[in-house]
Image (cartoon, rainbow, N blue to C red):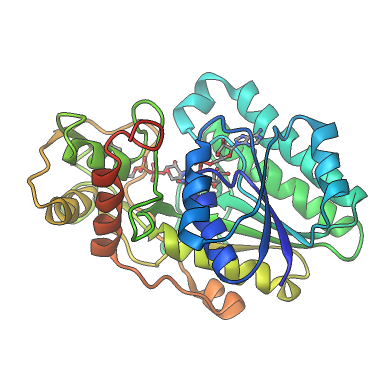
Length: 339
Ligand code: NAD
Ligand code: WQD
């Protein structure tokens, strides 16, 4: 069992992954500046796992504090979630995104290099593919992100490819997630966005719980069976298990390699609204509105490489995603801080 440094571990995907890592017997050192999360999620991870771990409130931009983490603790591997992820916000303030996501990762990799830690799992995104040229999307698909957010993800991938090629010993997994949703089945941890949710599932859940009036369905004239956008939604527990598989199989990664984490199955916006209505046991009102600029009609993954390389595949379907999202939302109608 190893000691894993998890950056951004208080966030949505990080908290679920921390739980799965603890349950698999790993020791954790978690760092997060809590800019988009609450320490309460980590307290709940401790409660669910009945295990404790080190948490330090550190910003990746604070290089001395970051270096100190590697001096204080004997770290075997790093899972790097910390980053900003809102597409619209990245268009309004690209400098913030480039500084936080790219300079933050530069600091982390620098600190790893000095401490001789060369095992890294990085949270990349399907957004690096840009407009899909063919479906399903394999890792060989051309890269061309559109938003500043997506460009920072590609820049970090490039940075890591260069570093891994510079000297032997680096083992880097770039995990490109599709659309993470759902929550731990206990309903104790889940997705708790601040402000108006940008993503579909948290918005749908906030309508279901009565915090918002109706879902705006962005576009009903796409070339898809029901006219609404199709995405590859993946349960966050599947994603967390994918990280466990990746960090435990880094010996299969020579240098730096990208792997899709998706289900390979696409669902439309109306499929999600319907499944969420079933899970919540109430009709979720929606209205059809014009397309959201920058959206594509349909995208889903080819998850074959993840299965071959990690021995991992997503197991949970759309109904389970909605059931668990609803369980978290109904138990925590106003998120972590205000329950
Ligand atoms: P999240 O915002 O819930 O978690 C990110 C965490 O990183 C937060 O707890 C935040 O406080 C922390 N953080 C941000 N900047 C930091 C900094 N400079 N120093 C220390 N901590 C910092 O987001 P998430 O959904 O859990 O996403 C985790 C990662 O996965 C992100 O890198 C994101 O870009 C990537 N990703 C997310 C999705 C998605 O749809 N959720 C899809 C693909 C990729
Ligand atoms: C899903 C579908 C919308 C909200 C984004 C990022 C991507 C990745 C995942 C981080 C689309 C529709 C949405 C709403 C709607 N994140 N929709 N009404 O755009 O596929 O991907 O999150 O890496 O990089 O771009 O996800 O959840 O925003 O949208 O109709 O209120 O739901 O048009 O078809 P998206 P999403």
